Image (cartoon, rainbow, N blue to C red; front, side, top):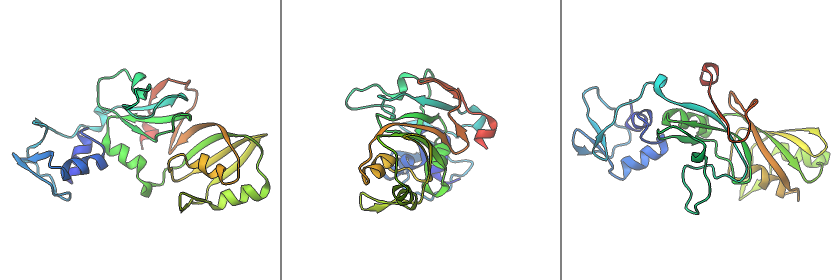
Length: 226
């Protein structure tokens, strides 16, 4: 098992953060600082971080939660501005990773997990996890605007990938993405002078928001974890 994956499965950090720790010389193997990303951890190796031995946690021992993030909550574990974060709702004592961050004003489904490797698989673009949202817009879209958004538009010098876009009722649309850039839906709508008045994520991969209420969480099912 590669060192960064080993650290993620041990709950030290997400795989991307684990790579940063390795590069910074924070990880030791058998008493020596090790900065090789591709290192394969051997059965007899003693891996330490901040002076403590780290070992992979069995998947059955990890925590996986579906969480309904309310609007007006920061979707990280801490905030330099002192605003309320998702950690106000997590009652456990483990290091958790927020999967599928939402901007401050948006609400809906996030996943909280102690499994850094699972977090990586859910977030990395190459796995193309579908994300589904309900977007309440300031007005209905024209047929031309709908077609334009479906094909992709330029935001931040980048053309978005094709999306699913379906009108449900007046002003309310279902949006399906396979990428998740910062404030992507809001920025896409800005290109046609439409304001997103409310945005809620209802699905992430196999995981659905279901009947959760704002601030509630539930364990993921076995089927959702497959």
